[in-house]
Image (cartoon, rainbow, N blue to C red; front, side, top):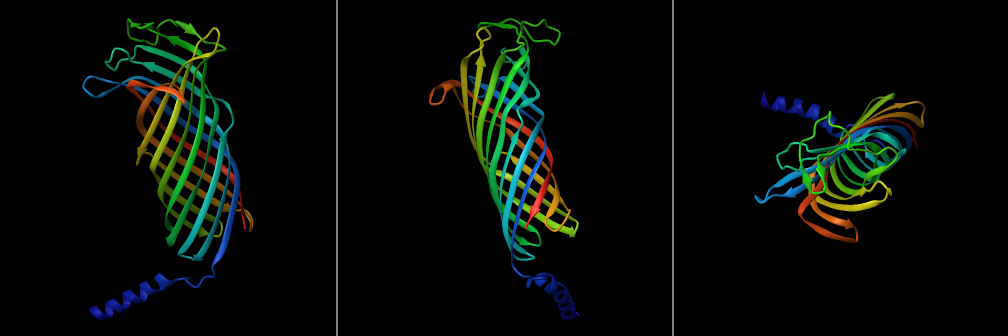
Length: 324
């Protein structure tokens, strides 16, 4: 009985293991151009080191992209060895159209008790938001595979217009913030704060792709940031004249911090063209590093303070896909 059962199992497994293995190897190429929207919030954090060797969040700024309009191009080249084995290399570039993408809100908690003392609200101009990089993956079992990726980002936000409700004058703070406080300052027509940074990430991930029919296919992938590097510059501006006067630089370098997920649904239109619907999401947990006064390379360590950021984003777009 056991011998018979083993034979039956083998009869089922062997065809699965070698199904379509004799399929001809082939080269494949895809290129797409598309547009979509990205929603997200980046929170810039500034910490003071306390006497208990702990960190206290003195200030935080929330920069919104709700939404930013993106355009992107993408190209994938690969080679299929069989229905179970293929290798792919994807390169991508996306850029936002400069525009107002929401608000920037600046909070201070200067009594070291967690309660907000000072607040300001401004329009967030996304002057630059580009992302480029590559993904390489190897599919080893019926659409399941593993990969490595690299991404470079360059972002420039500008807080302009708006108002402030401050309890701090000079170095003295005399109260807590409430929403009904009068405006100490109105900034119509002025740049108040800018925030710019560049980042790069090395990623590792898993992918899965499958064509359910000749008219519908799906690809899912999930990525973990193996290594993350961010360098950010926060600039504060005086009003009259409207020029920069204070510079803060933060450097973040961390391992295993942040995830990304992506999904693509392709609907063929003809032999060589398809519509591709794409969704994506990223999450970067709070990470911080040394804070510096000044702009590189002329800066000095801001002893006793650290800076960094956390962020999330979600995006969706539609692209025209060409296949060769």
